[in-house]
Structures are given as structure tokens and as C-alpha cells.
Image (cartoon, rainbow, N blue to C red; front, side):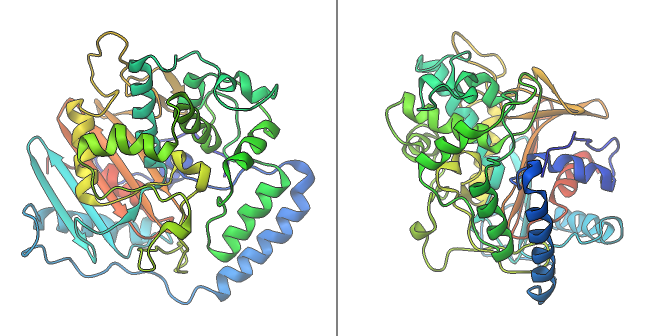
Length: 410
């Protein structure tokens, strides 16, 4: 979908339905349609609707609470009760918001409270566009090492020829100001996207050469203004890998995952790399959804992780140990979370969005694949964070996350 301005909660209650549609700008979704494909789009949309009705045998329901007594410490009945209250409230306020396996985690200084339903700290989830925050840290690390500069054009690192996209700077890609669309919009990409929607499968299983070809064909509109682009961040990640003379997965492993000890976090780029029993999620209508591994688009949303590792990631962002998150950067270092440009009703730095709510500064990113939904929200001033992971796409995860962080004093 075309991104919409975000409207985050103005009070300590769960945000209104309009806020949900707005925050959804960060999710991986279909590209806006070029005019010549409108008729095809209508016909395919009808097919998708019919298939959705026929192939939706059940609506996901929240699983039973996880028994943490034999697991890691920190399970919190108060947090679990709070989550269940918010979810119950969403039942009337947000039609179609559903959950199945869910983990909610709250960081407050040195303490962590966690609650799960059918899942625990070791359950694997696709984190979708939260992956972009890892790509942002790779950008910061490349800047620190002098491998790239903020104003460097992506065409100096990737084979984009003389296409308009070649002139986009890495800073523009990292702040969604390149003018690129949310997804490639050529006919081949549109066909893949709609087939993926129809069959509840990954439509990004293409080689890097295809990504570059589709980027060369992409139109540039309103360069310099905020327009959320998965395509742009995919190019950013591939450009950073090229600058380091490696591939994106190895770059992520050696510069982020290994140093921070995120041993359960992986980036399978193609579905054939996943074990047969790899967790798979559900669409909002309850259809089992195939895994999303995203191929060359992985820098925009391909990571699979656990609540335990995402707690470590959130803490690394809070304490500045994640590259690019030191609030007082020295030398060539950069603070990714520093808001620099307008992004709807919020502001954006490099990848991370910042929203002011009731006098608080909340830094966040969410993500959604075909079968999972996630959000990470940090409040540096209060040294607190919320992580929510769900195996159902299209649920009320964003609203749940914001409600939890705004209610943290209760």
C-alpha cells in the first residue's frame, strides 16, 4: 500500500483506528499501482477477495498463556493481564484484529517483564521491517569506518547505470527521501506481488540482478520528501555490502549479530535455506502463510529472531552499544535515532521514527510480513522499551505496543 502519515497515540489509551492505518506505513506491503495496470489490478483484487473467503477456514485466536516457570526469569502476570485487557478492548475498537502466538516484553532499566501466549523467549518470529533498524546500524558502522559517506550516490556502489535512482544518496535511502516507490512497480513485480497475495507466499524470491533491474525502472517522485520505500532500504543494504566487498548477510553477521551475541537471529535469504519445521505465521484472515525470506530485498525485512534476542537488541539501542545509537556520537559516528526530517506527523532520522506523545519522545519501528507482525519502541529518557512479536499479520500489534509503553507507570 502507499504509505500514509502516521498518527501515534495522544493519550495513555490504545490509539484510535485512524492511528492504526497511519502507523502501517512501515509495513512491507504492495506497491501503488501505475495507471495502465488498473484493470488488471481490479480483476486480481477480486480474485484475491474470493480466494480469501474460500481459503480462510478459521480466525486466529490468542493462545493460552505460556508457563514460564521452567524457563527464564522475568515472566510477569501484571504485564500479561495488561496485554489481555488491551487486546480485549481491541475486539470492539479494531474489527479484525487477531492474535495467535504472541510475546510482549517490557524493559525498565535493568529489569525486564515478559509475557507469552503459545510462545516464549526462544520462539522464532519474522520481524519484517524491524530488520531496517539493523540495516541502519550497518550504515552507521560503514560511516564510522569511512567506507561510505552520507551524500554518496548509490550508483557509485551498485550497477544502476544512468537511471534516475543512481543519483539517490545513501542518506536519502536511509531516511525514505529518495523518491523511490514503496515497492518496484513494473509489471513483473506487480505480478509477483499479486500472486504472493493470492497464494499467501513470498513474492520476493528473485536474484540481486532483478532487484537492480527493477530499481533502474523505478520512477522517482518528490525526491527530498518522505515516502516510505522498501525498495530504497533494500538498495541501501546491498550498497553497504558492496562497499565492504561482501554480501549483506555476512555483513550483518560479522558487524551486528556476532558482536552483540544475537545467536538466535538469522537472515535466510531464500526459503530453501529454512528447515522444514521453521515457524510460519498466518494472514489476518487466518490462512497459513508461507515464509518470507525476501531474497535481495532482505535488508528491508528478512530477519527472523526471538523475544530474547530482541530484548538484547532493544537494550543495545538504549545503551548505545548498537552501532549508530550513541546519543553523543564522537568523530565520524552518527546518531541514527536523532530526528532530522518530517515524516507524516512524526520525524525520522536514519530509519528510526520518532514521535512525541504526552511530552515523551518515543523512537520506534514496526514490521509486518505476510504472516507476522512486530514492533520495537524505545524511550531513551526513561530507559524503557517495549517489544511485541506476533505470528499473525494485520493484527493490532502497533496499537498494543504504543498502549503498553504509554501505560508503563500503571
